[in-house]
Image (tube, rainbow, N blue to C red; front, side):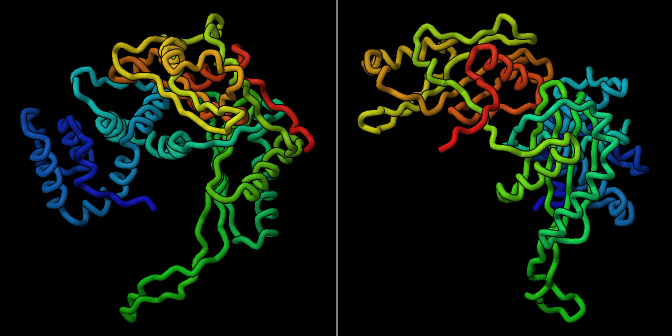
Length: 397
């Protein structure tokens, strides 16, 4: 469960206290002056926390909900989404005078000057901080078509979930961002017994019943004709939600398609990724790891390429390990169970101007998502290289 606002934890994210002073002034709270940059971080955090604790209680009550949002968004992902939303709306951020601005500083800047961005950023950040999406192919639809079916989709989800004896309510929120359709389904789950304090009698009640709320995240990518879904419950429940989404929005059914990848080609010392047709700022790539299965003995071995400044690109480092272990002539009798790649992209939103995208690939899965342009480009490179074989029907066993 997410925590509320914790001053000592949040103020560690602030480097530019001038921004904090401006934020307080925007909320009619005076008396906080920027802390000199030479002040040790520990002392600066203590001063910020002490000032906050001494704010008039009535003002602090009004301020805390805003700070809860800001603290939750003060991550690299939150700052990035906020910046992209601002760019989408034609809002420019001028932090050139603040050389040491952190993600927390950037979010605080927007919260002070463009508070209308916070709720949208909060909604989208939930999608982009989720990992482990399941991707499924779909027919093509324009986003406007999906938006026109929201009422039907809401009614259908309520019908389906009530058949499962869940709660009475389900809610749908949507947002179009980066030319992608984001939909969050929230619904009441089965009732659960949750201990709680009976304040009237001052006792612990261990029989309190409540219905927790569960979330299902959907992202439709019209440029890829793919749906991403993330749900923390069972596969059966996830598939029920995905089937409903497909049926109402695409007049399509959930079938037995699976995504396949050919990773055995990495057993070829001369193999290289096809990057000539890739659009974007790919700088380099390298083979980071291999999981080997010796087919006769059924033994496994994991190989990891060296790190550091001396590392080379492509497959050279890995093949040096293979040759040193005298495995070159045995590769024909070895099956690759998984492959780890790293692709380096130019990205001016990072401090070093470089973003590393890691991909772990097996014959039926790939850790790459669809959420960042770099990940999507990496997936296209896998497809152009013949590694990504696409969605195919499962073979009958």
